Image (cartoon, rainbow, N blue to C red):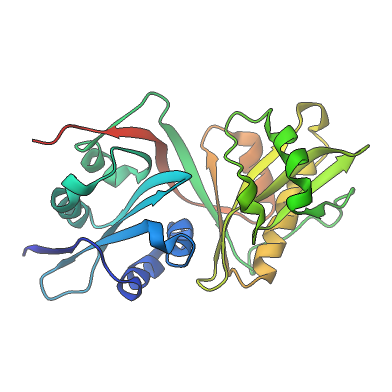
Length: 267
């Protein structure tokens, strides 16, 4: 049975597929709404006579370019074969193990592709710490300079000032200086999804439970906004962070590979 590929599917068709695995698609669901929708393209594949069971998001935002496949491997292969000529020249890959071989026919990863965990929680599973002194406070645009100062020590930092607009950021400070902070990559109450990120504690302030307190505050804020599924990414070898997130009720959903890759020559 052959595959039918829709290179640029409509929002409703994309949403139907993404909702089959909301924990994996926590980021992609946000790309169904503005301001990201104008930069995103969802290619879908369906067996003849059936609904789509494979897809691939290509997000080409001014700040980031991302490729995220999902679903049946044969369908993903059909999608890449169809849209190969339109793929971005370079992209950040988020690829589960079953799709990696397919994607690497078209993209050559740079050194430093990391094994990651996608972790997930919801209102039923989330359990914040009973006590978390000092209490994190909400951060906004006025705190941008302090956040840039904090994240200067964070090699994996992807913070952008515009993330504060509509996002949920919290921090713990002492003597007017942020010791720890965390926030969101995407917030999409309309799709019921949010993604936690940018969790960082200064080395000299570690061991005090600040990362746990900040993560709990961000998660609670997302749930209060109507994000019924909250996700985050963490490197698979970062045991201390995984322990913090697990203590708050986050559970491993899947493992995947993440990193920058360049498109291979066609033909």
